[in-house]
Image (cartoon, rainbow, N blue to C red):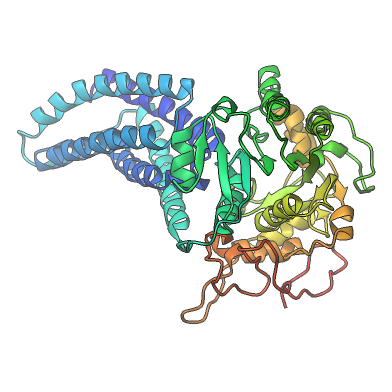
Length: 534
């Protein structure tokens, strides 16, 4: 290979890695999107081919049939890339920077193919051989790149399998007569909520900036709207669930990123409440998102809904977010703001990212590990949202967390036990602060939040202890023949279960939002994280 070929392939590799990490992993979070299953399968196949090609171009000069085999791999990769472009266009609206990056990648790759194909055709005329070569630093760079793309290929294949498991067809149910407008319906929480609302017979309107993606995620049983202006003033809406918001974990909190996060929550909520005032009849209830970041860093204080807001970007964000939502009270609308903790599920959120290094024995305790974490399973959170929609007793700010918070170190140890991996690493607080800036507060702030109002309202949690949730979600589960895995462990949205299906103990009933008897738990040990399913 010539130096020009090696340079072009190096540029393609670096920009491809940027696209993969920035868009596929951080901003779009494709491995947790059911609608991205086919795209992930294409990515997995293409990354496997890249892994082979990188090793060949790094250390081998193919000739004869070997050169023809490399040509065939390049042709297959081009076909997969074209199919990937078509799939992306069908299922999601690409951000502007991703479109630009794809265009640049196509130009560079076209230049690479234009130079490497004539060389491979020429090499195919020689006797078949695999002659060793050494391109110096280029060879070692492509070796590292090969290991990386092979890892992503395996990871994406695992995501394809996980997203395709346990799909259950929802049987038709009588219409409930309720109409619910959901913002953020394609998200981690919203997608399961919409499925459950549809499963119980509600008419759902899904507001999304990307109707193609919304239709791919939620299906055609939902009315998809791109703008509130599409709904006339006489539209009857019984409830609104406002879950819209850009991911708060991911890119650093630069000034521009802070503005985007605030606008995606506060700005959209303000627009939503203003629009509610234009309707002939205001909705009966608005359930709006919030977060326990409202309380700031509070050390060992036990935090209930009566506590004042803390300080810092997250606390200011949540306080202003709730203020905008509570303006709807002037319209006669009941308002519920759910202050959500860390939401646990393998289908998305923070848990897959936290569990990934732990699976390889690289889990770590952040800071001194004594900071309190408050959490909730995704299925319990969705049940809580539905309770807030249905019951007029739910009003005001409510902590959406499980009854038993635990310290960060105990959480990491419970996760390591669930995965059957060691835990011996630690990351000093100053390293996180230097690397992540104020975003490190998500992992370092201590928030010992208790669901006082939810318990007063009689809400019963399916999972009380983090160790139980982690075991159900992450640990290998033995199962008897013909027995369905527990939905928390399988990652299957419980809303996909037919309303009249048999549901295991401790799992919410999809049709009415209520629950069966909870999982039996042993008392918590002294360490604070040892609750286990009996």
